[in-house]
Length: 138
Image 1: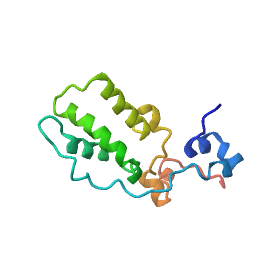
Image 2 (image 1 turned 180 degrees about the vertical axis):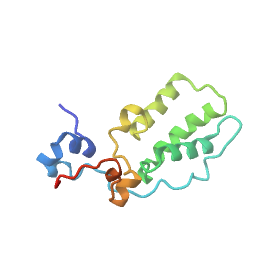
Image 3 (image 1 turned 30 degrees about the vertical axis):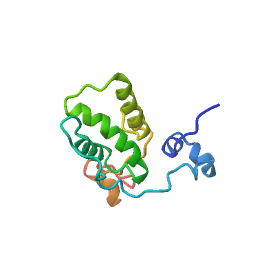
C-alpha cells in the first residue's frame, strides 16, 4: 500500500493537476498560530523547557500551528534537558526526533511541508528584469 502524498508533493510531481479532488481534504483545517508558551512550562535548573519552546517556535516559524502544541510541548521538555546540560537517554532523544519529524522540522521532512513564499513572491513582482535584457518582441 502506497502512502498518501502531501499537497506540496502532489503539486510538485503533477499528481494534483491530474486529480485535484484527491488532495482537497489532505490539508490541516486549523491554521491558528502556535501561540504563547503555556504557564505550566517553566525553566528550572534541570530543564530549560520554556527556552526550548521559544527556540522551537523560532525554528518552526510559519509552519507551526495550534495543532502542533502538544508536539511542541513534548519536544520542548526533552530539548530543555539538553539546553540545561543534561544527557537524556537515547529513547528520549529518539522521541524528540520523532516529534520533529512529525512537525516537518528535520532536513528530510522539511521538503514535505509547504514553504512560505519569499518576499518577492509575496508582492507578486519579480526582479528578474534587472538581470535579463531579453525581449521576445525584438
